[in-house]
Image 1 (cartoon, protein in one colour):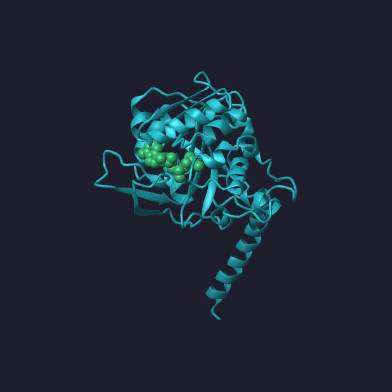
Image 2 (cartoon, rainbow, N blue to C red):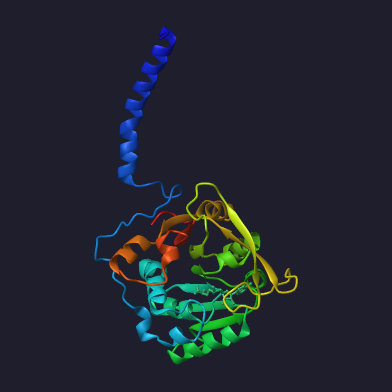
Length: 291
Ligand SMILES: C[S@@+](CC[C@H](N)C(=O)[O-])C[C@H]1O[C@@H](n2cnc3c(N)ncnc32)[C@H](O)[C@@H]1O
């Protein structure tokens, strides 16, 4: 072995020893907030039992055919609202793709002052208004706008403290319009609940496909639609981080789905969350000072 080779090996060994404690410290402190996946359960066993929120609002088990199963709705409530109570207290909320009003109701019942929902399908706007009215929330607290999310966000002057984008990011490919519109609301917080087949992959990736605008829970026809076919994408977390960064937001944390599924065993219809292809992300405006 040459002297040069031996010296290089010795230097590498020294470098490794110096770096090793730093690596250990990094692991103990948890991954940096805007880098790797944040999916290990960080909660004590037993602390993530579901409150079964929708048992008090059972109309939502029946008013939609899109993912209304009891367990899934109730666990999604915990991940999207229960874990984020602090940001809903007294907040004005904008609910993108508000469907039958399930999450608008959840926002109000979790402490929000008011909510505006945007939904493309008029029959769902009607259902949402009826559902919220039935549970005592009139037009002073909850209102719904019928139209394409991108158009409404960029043509109306809607302000909000919190924007929720739940089950919608994978029904669009119009990210610039969507994020410009969200930025225009002045929201400090954004909650995203979304799916990608490559969610935790390290390489930014958007899966492109088409959806049939005839289906209730899918992308609605918009100004760019040819026939019934809507072009949509499914960005993974790495791609979402880049998009958020371009519009002044960053990932603050992921909801603790591992803890929820650990503490509510036997839960059906949550495989996408269990295998980390679907996640719930809390994002914060980069201009906000740390809480
Ligand atoms: C999968 S559902 C999600 C419903 C609900 N937000 C949730 O997470 O349970 C998608 C919703 O997006 C609505 N939608 C699809 N494309 C839209 C668009 N361009 N503008 C507004 N709403 C749209 C659909 O009508 C449907 O209500």
